[in-house]
Amino acid sequence: MKRDIYTYLLNWKKETGRKPLILKGARQVGKTYILKEFGRREYRKTAYFDFEKDPALGEIFKGDLSPDKIVEKLSIALEEKIEKNETLIIFDEIQECPAALTSLKYFCDEAPEFNIIASGSLLGIKLGQKKSFPVGKVKLKTLHPMSFKEFLSGIGKDRLRELIRGKEDTVEINKKFHAELIDYLKIYFFIGGMPEAVYRYSEDKNDFNRIRQIQKDILTGYEDDFGKHSSKNDALKIKEIWETIPKELAKENKKFMISHINKNARYRDYWHAIQWLENSGYIYLIKRISRPSLPLVNYTEKNVFKLFFLDTGLLGAMLNLSPRVIIEGSKLFKWYNGVFTENYVTQQLIAEGIENIYYWASGATAEVDFIVEEGTNIYPLEVKSGVIRKSISLETYNNKYNPDKLCRSSISNFSSSGKYRNFPLYAVSLFPSLLEKISAVK
Image (tube, rainbow, N blue to C red):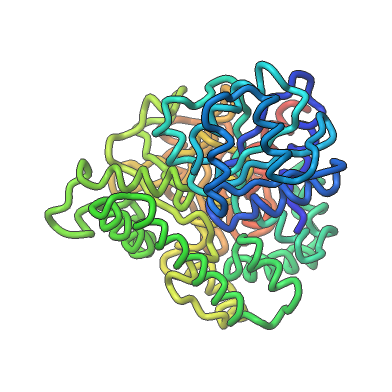
């Protein structure tokens, strides 16, 4: 499957003074596949080592961590010579061997001519526990599930993807193409961005039961991790949080309430479980801000946040969403108070590398779903699950803060009216970069 991260990997390979790369990401998002494909296409050889599958590899990193010694031992284990600048070395599930993680420091300082990429499914959790992490000696990158743009490429619809990518304004696109993109968006809501599910759809457009089974198998694997990689007490709390998220997202007010787990639950008792899920890459946490001022992080409210799944397809599997909704008009976008729509937008913005994402609310009267900090600008984005009629929340926000732009995302086409800009849901990945691009031209 085509992945956008491939361009990033190519640029990494060309860097002067290249550092070892660490690729993070949840299980089943395609890390191993893309790294092996990168090695196959761009190097003469690939030396692949899986520390989870072969724990004995850890013996290589006991004692002397000098790169020459390690490469010599790895070559013996591989039964093939590892060559400088010609071989891509992949350390998979590196979190299982802390010494291998530490060794990256020495490769950076003493042997940058070796091309090394390390990856791990639960690396986000392990990195915070290791005092020997090579700070400043590695590059970090996260791989997420396939975005809607990647999904279009994955099913052979590059023409539609290019239509979105080529937008330089917020003028509506051809209605035929708009309708076609909305139809594929419905399918993406069900399938999501897990590569195996997308691949299955690309091979057989009618096998939705098999796709659902793939998603359920992935969820089972995630739940198995709760017990394998945390204490018994933490595993129970992690599972409680995990199972509560879909119910919280189905509410009109999607703010996560610990008390909905049980009336005696307290944030201090569950915060570690929430962090475990976030660090694993299984969920996204979006905090609420009291006011939209720079930097937004200074205005976050304690214990007020929303939790979203890493993938809208997995969320649908959790809620047992039927494939029938794909053909039932725009009902899917409104299902469960727009739960899939808001989760989808979160997933797309994060896939675009937007890290500073928050939301804003004014009592119980108004809520703007996303507040994004981009450079010195702050952009509000309200997500609508149907065709837009009126936006009371954005009007309230406008009256309080008078921003330059008021943005919405819905199933409507691109449009502009005064301060308002509408991004179709299938093109929400252009927010807010397109606004920045238009402003730069002016």
